[in-house]
Image (tube, rainbow, N blue to C red; front, side, top):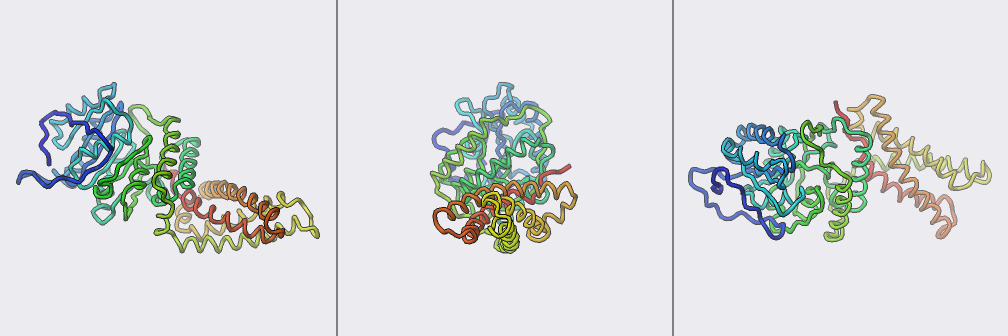
Length: 412
């Protein structure tokens, strides 16, 4: 552990955003090696900084006394957050403070903190108390049990959001869906790729030049790092009680920019295959077969010249919606029974159906496009063309529903 003079600020690293190996141990015989380096990026968090430092210190003093460091990286907050944090260093000897005056941005702040860190486990937590501090110990335990990366997730059992508006939920879902389309090999590996609460082993990113845009540092870590086993711990995202929210439209623009840059620079598409849920996919596929029967039957009844003889596109839309209802019911009681059994209220079931329907309706648009293309330009047989369209849409429906439907997100 490096010796830091009381109340002195850390020197801000310069140059590329690259994490280096730790040098050979040079600590004194009576000092403890640092296990966890936890970065707390801040901007205008004067109302929260003392409380978060106190809570984290109490937790970690009990779990790994003397073997951790808290690194506050402040972007020269006008409310003097860095100054308040610096004044706490005498009371909290594991606290270190960095004041950045030439750089801005949450992601780069986290990386600069990691560059100054002396631990073999690197972590990040928000200062606004929206990340429940007690989950930190569960993340650390997951790392100790063999995970390379431990992520706090709002989208697994034990997770959720407390009081998000419909618009914010919609934006969050849309952002994740967009990520799954642009960068499936990264976003598919975790249920909550936009989480800003996680820790990882240092060696996973040593020597990697990170190049984040915006505030989704987890994307950069998975996309550019050598991350093997990933563990997830559920947590409930709470609304902030002090300070002001940093969420703006610009962050969504930065997120899209980040996805595209990662996609172009890494070219990753298939890491998701190693953890592909074959059993669940087979159940989904069998349910889909029942949907094919429903779809074909309704399409025949509506479009065949010997029956109603309705236009092909109109008949397909109606047949697809009936098949969606069929598929939802079977998926809810069989494919995703482990989740739906914990959410049996009619409102929860209705919410799942609406999400499933929206996703599948998007798949239906894809289905109709493929059907018409194949029927008009490849095979002049409405039923063969329909089978090809169904196959293409099935891949879409399974993957997106796997990531966005049947999840616990609404909690009290």
